[in-house]
Length: 256
Ligand SMILES: Nc1nc2c(ncn2[C@@H]2O[C@H](COP(=O)(O)OP(=O)(O)O[C@H]3O[C@H](CO)[C@@H](O)[C@H](O)[C@@H]3O)[C@@H](O)[C@H]2O)c(=O)[nH]1
Ligand SMILES: [Mg+2]
Image (cartoon, rainbow, N blue to C red; front, top):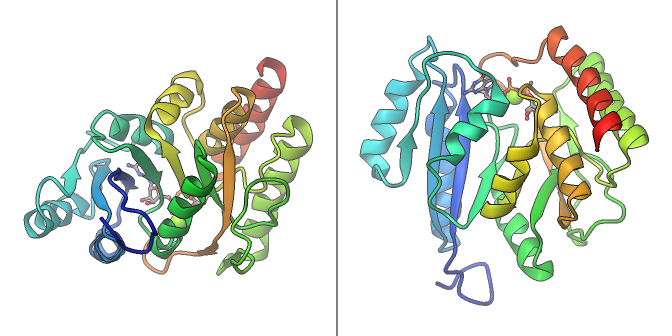
């Protein structure tokens, strides 16, 4: 198939979309994803992992499956809110594509960046491409792209994010500029491998995945992204996640 890319792309791209109370966001993010993949003539599927959201997200997902096709929007629910890390593990069981894209359902991660991820992956035959909100340094990088950034976060949340990245980068030195972000593209077997060795389950999961990937010798490229805070609903990041993050760094420091 021919599109944004010079050569036909016969790979299939699977998006794992974890949702918790994303009723208002889900239809639009799915529409944007479908549009992006269709315009670029890429084959795709979206695995929605909903944790029994009280706002009825699952009903919306079922309607979307009717509209786009059950092979395109695949609902794989769980009984209760079990966390972001295990949502990816669960979703991974149902992936039928060659590459997996992990992203948030609340528009913080815009699908428009996906073709750039794919282009960079192809150019360097990378195992992983990660979006970065921060300055990218050593990794294969999209040179013509504008710098990434964060919009809509208050000072405290920005500080937490910067601090989390600084701490992990200083102590563990994986050489990736955005360790806590979760907008990433993985080669399927690479994601399967890293996930089996990753122990944390909450927000710290993103950082651990990247540190482990680097320790295992997988190649990582970076694409600058703008992260826009959600308009509908609330973030699920709480104080307990910050504590688990610090613990996660310690575990990695002593084991990797
Ligand atoms: N299934 C499921 N989904 C969840 C859960 N918790 C959150 N989600 C979903 O996961 C996505 C991210 O959750 P948010 O609550 O919006 O996270 P955030 O605070 O905006 O955090 C983002 O930035 C962090 C660092 O900057 C990232 O670490 C994090 O992964 C996420 O991208 C959303 O699609 C949300 O519905 C859960 O327990 N279960
Ligand atoms: Mg969010």
